[in-house]
Length: 274
Image (tube, rainbow, N blue to C red; front, side, top):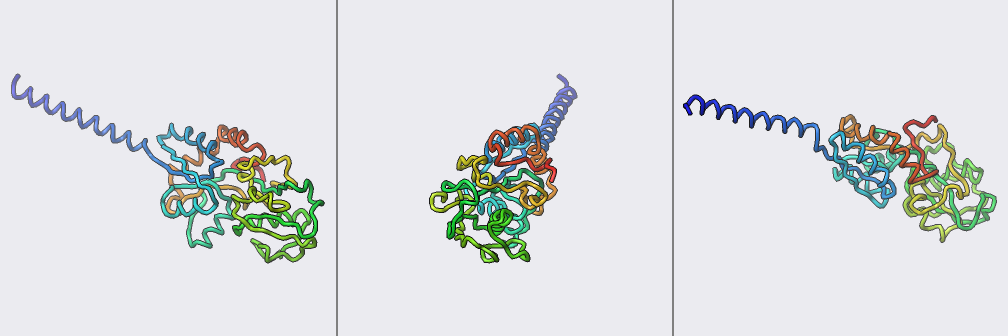
């Protein structure tokens, strides 16, 4: 073989290797993206559907579960997860204010109607003087629970307060006693109180039947602050990969999974008419 042919062969092999390398590099730009999402354990089956949906987009969705209502935002703020999905808008606003953070919503997920459950009564008229009621202890859900009672004529709140607490009760004819606990614990303390006001996902975890709730929050335009959201750090507000995850959540497949897992305890919010 001549020196020229040998040289040509070497050049050809080099260009072939370079071409394969470039192709592999291009492929890596469109695949292998990892996104970590922080959620409540009860939502895991739903997010497995989302994980399947984004796989075709080259996204590896890693699901991390948290057992309470405080850890997911801390994890997001510290970069342990890229996004989370467990809270409604008012909870996020309260969290940002209390912790001096700037986490932002990047998409709607569900509405979880809050409801009052009891092992001792079946209707509100059975409440007696001095009965104990358990409610969530975070500012937004405490306000929401108290407003549920106000809407049903059980008490009156200070109208000037956007997020009223038990200190803002103006009228409490039954002298009800309120026990505040972490939202995730409201279903577990039912034996110790007359009734407990429970978020939808917590009720589902506790196998509480929404049809047996004493009273349930009505879904209307007043529910907008309680729409659950997917949340990211402010710098990632327009992150295209995270937006693909949002789009993968807002699908018919996920809607079916929500109905299967939650029944009446959760309602898809992205196409809800409020």
